[in-house]
Structure formats: structure tokens, C-alpha cells
Amino acid sequence: DPKDIMRSVDPAALYMLEKAKDQNLISSYDRFAAQQPQCAFGYEGICCRICFQGPCRIKPGDGPGSKGICGATAYTIVSRNIARMMAGGASAHSDHGRHIVHALLHAAEGKLADFKVTDVEKLNRVAERIGISAEGKTENELAVEVSKAALEDFGRQTDEPCTWLTTTITDGRNKKFADCCIAPTAIDRSVVSLLHQTHIGTDADPVNIIFGGLKCGLADYVGMHISTDLSDVLFGTPKPVVTEANLGVLKEDKVNVIVHGHNPILSQTVVNVAKEMEAEAKAAGATGIQLSGICCTGNEVLMRSGVPIATNFSSQELAIMTGAVDVMVVDVQCIMPSVQAVAECFHTKIVTTMDISKIPGAHHFAFDEEHAVESAKAVIRLAIEGYKNRQGMACDIPQIKNKVIAGFSVEAIVELLAAINPETPIKVLTDAVEAGELAGVALLCGCNNLESVHDNNHLTIARELTKNNVFVVTTGCSAQALAKAGMMAPEAIEEYAGEGLKNFLKRLADANQDKLTDGLPLVFHMGSCVDNSRAHDLSTMMAKQLNVDTPKVPFVASAPEAMSEKAVSIGAGAVAMGYPTHVGTMPPIEGSPLVFGIATQIASDVYGGYFIFETDPMVAAAKLLASLDNRTWKLGIHK
Ligand code: SF4
Image 1 (cartoon, rainbow, N blue to C red):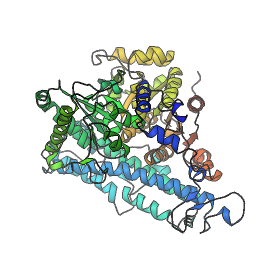
Image 2 (cartoon, protein in one colour):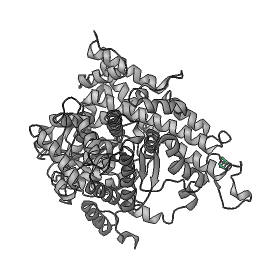
Image 3 (spheres, helix red, strand yellow):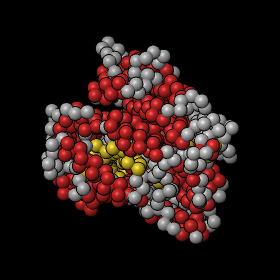
Image 4 (cartoon, rainbow, N blue to C red):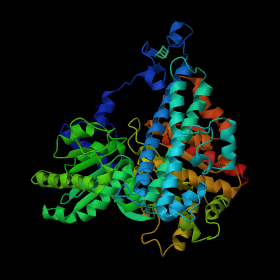
């Protein structure tokens, strides 16, 4: 029975899967099994549906069946398909970014009473970086100028590259992107151009198509960076926080509200408002309001407000199956439509809030930024009603959770390093690499994908890398997998870290004793998927300190359980920046050995970064360590 195979390494998810089996509740784990075997043409990327003469499926050999009806070969079809995924990913990240820019602009113009500039220092830093003087301007005037500069990066019609690209990367990368003509001039234009380029009968050249894809990957980077910067300006730059993760954070005697999706505008407002509504919850008989998060909107409020993590992408339906969730309020991206079907088996209400993201049967409260607090209060009142309706119904919450220390923005990491070296904080990190104490830095990021055992790739790779003295930073559902498993608790250092990493973290913790009430974690949570921009900034700082370009920095990235279009565009951007970039679940490109070779080898010759496709997490960890080894050896570091 495919239901009996090991489907997760998260004990809370396994507990809920058992319950689901007993009660005949269907989840994504069952649907994944029911979809097997999946279409081999689609899996390899050689099914073309770009025009409706198709679908065309490419067969081996030289006959007419070896090409699409229009004559497209496997390499054209595979490159077009994967490039269109990059356009989808860049669209999602940057549309999220645009939403944040509009919120900041309208708040600074005095049109949104419920939002304001919260982090003036960050606003000043961003303005200075992009060449806008703060002199003689109020913070709102400055925020308006910064917001308008960000909007230029979406819609510029001239040929200057995006400001958020050129001002955040090394000179070497700027030159490389200009030489290869892949520096985006505007996010929207990059996406539109790529959709045009991959229309039937436009571009057939796989290298040219992949270069168009990389431009979109860099547009994705711009969108992510704008999102991170301006979210920090609106809601504050994260600092270390102590919290918890896994389904045990739900409380039977409280009103349980889960925020799910990606955009902090709604979730942060819900968090801010919940504090004011404790009395209303208590009047309804609850002991209070318990907020928790799923996916990146959960990471946003975890980083800034210490809101606990309920679970990550693959197990989102399982949270509802506890019977304890009164409202799951969602915004955009990674929300399985099935949450509504599961919620209908319980008292749970699903609340959609964005005009581009609705689910039939769910409540839709249009989230109105002009009346944000009122909208958030309405959501919480629905949850309080839900709590009342839940009385007398059974809850089954697995009592499994772990302590989490998170909140590591680049600014927070630099502050920790500055306690050792106030003049050049980043040198503490690069010195540790140059001394051989650390093997390098790795970013673990991305999704869950049920092609692998839920969370297993994330945990295995993190354990192997930390055992071998790699400083691990993490974002997204990867961070949530590591948080749930206790790898963001100080105790994990003793359990998993190699001697070098242990010594490095101890030095850092000792120097910051006054600031850290609970010590440091084994792996550092940098935030949501758009906050991959924070990890990019860290590697750029290392490059500048080491006086090399980013492809020479001992820095690797891994998306151990990637599945979304956003993961494809993030990966493309990471390769262009020069990182060895591991993907632990196969993207649909195996149908063209040429495209596979471009991704894994030719990319390295041109950009210094390349993809490592490896589904065995132990082998993947070994390959990532070998990439770091190669880079430290090239820097002349002999261990
Ligand atoms: Fe077939 Fe070409 Fe149309 Fe694709 S674009 S479906 S390969 S005819």
C-alpha cells in the first residue's frame, strides 16, 4: 500500500498521517501516490503545450515524431518550458514586491493610516545605496522617493539595468551581466520578453532561451531584494527572536489562527491586531489567541514578531486535521486548493484575502489596505466565532514542537560579528573560512516536494554540512523543516556541529552574551523565500572582503526539495551570481542532454555557478562539500 511507505521524517506529520488514514481523510501524500506513474514526457520536459496544435511529445530517433509539429526539437522544447517556469517564478516574487512598494508609497503619501515607516535606519541605508540623498527630507518624503525608484525597476522603458541589481552586487558581476546582456532593465519587461521569446515560432536556440531565462532569474532577484528591503522599512528589520515550531504550537484552549502564504502586509497586521483582541477571545471562553504560521508569510512574522511555525508546505492540510485551527487566513502562493476540502471536514474556516487568490467555497474577505486593521479584526472575530463553535468537538494536536532561535537578517548577523570585530565585522566570517575553521557557507532554501520523503532532504543535508563545519543559513520551507526538527535550538550545536563550527559559534555566542538570552542556533534562519536576497547580500559582502568575485566565494546554495516555479527562477539567479546550486528533486530538463549540460557545465564556464542535480541527500551533501573544498583550495586555503 503506497500509504504505508515512509512519507515524512517529521514526527508530527507522521502522527497526523496515521490519523488521516484512520479517518479516511485525503491529503497531498495520497494524491501523490495516486498520480504514479507520472507522465515521463512531462517529467523530462519534452511535452510541449505552447500552441494547441500540440501537445507534442518528442520521441527518440530521427523520424517526424522526434520533433514537434512545428519542428521544435527536444532542446527547444525543454529550454522553452523551463524558461517559462522562470518567468512564472519571477512574476510571483516581483508581484509580491510590487505590493510592498505600493504599501510603502501609499503609507508615506499619507493614504494608509495603518502603515508607516517603522525602520528609518533601513530606509536611510537603502536610499544611500541606491544614490538618493536623505538630506533635508522627512522620512516620508524619502520613502516616497525610494518607492518610486523601486517602481522604476518594474517598468523602466530605457536600457539602464535595474537599480536593485547594480547597487547590490559586485563590480565583477555587473560587468559579467552587461557582457552577457542578461542584466534586466525592468522586471515586467523581462517577463514579457521571455514569454514572447518562448512563443511558438520565436526563439529556437536553447542557449539564447536560457540566457533570456537567466535575465528573468535576475529580475526575480531584483523583485526579492525590493521585497526584503521595503518590508524591513515597513515592518522592521529582524533581530534574534526565541519561539517554537511544529504542530504542538497549536493550543486547544486558545483561538487558533494560522497565517499562510507569502506576503507580510496581511499577516503582520493580523499579528499586530491580535494583541488588542485578547480580551475578546477571553470573553468567548478561550485563554487567548494563538497565532502560528505556514510557509513564508509565517516566516515573515516569525522573523519580526516571534510567531511560532505550525508546519511547512507539504503538511499544510495536516494542520487542519488537528481539528484545532479556527481560521486559516491565506494570501498568495503555495496555498494548496485542497485546504478548503479538508477544512469542510472540520469547523475550520479558510479565509482568502487577495483578489488574485481565491478558493471556491472559502470565505473571501478582500483585504483592504486602507482599512487594514479593520480587515484583520474581522478575520480574528471569525476565528473567535470558530472557537465557540469548536466547543464539544475533539481536537487532536500532536504534542511535538521544538525551540527556535531565529531572526537573522544580514544586519543581525553583522551585529553579532561586530561584537568580535567592530571595524570589519564580515572579516570574522571570512577569517574563519580562511583559517579552515569553517568549510564555507551554505544557503538551504526552497520548498517541499513529495517526490522525496517530506523534510528528509533538508535535514540530511543540514546535518552533513554542519558536521563538516559549514555555516548554514536558511530560508523558506527549508528553514521551517530545520526549525521543526530542533536544528534552530542551541542544543543542536552540541549534537550536530563539527569542531570548527562549534568553536566559531561559541566565539560568537560568548561575544554576544549580553544580547542573546538563549544562545545561538546551529543553523541561522534568514527569513522567507524573498529573503534569499539576504543570503545573496552575505555572499556579496564575503566576496568584497575576500577581494574576489562571488563565483570564487566558498558559498553554495541548495534547494533540497524544490518544486515551485519560484524555485526555478531563484536557482537561475543563484547560478548567474556564481554559486554551485544543488537541486534535490529533478526539474523537467532531462529530455534534452544539451540543456542539461548547459545547466550543469556550460553555466560554470560562463558564470562560475552551475546546477548540481542530485536526489540522494547524502551524495548531494558530499558534492556541496566538494564544491566548497574546491573554492577554498583555489583561494589558497590549505586545511
Ligand atoms: Fe507542438 Fe510546436 Fe505547438 Fe509546441 S509549439 S505544441 S512543439 S507545434
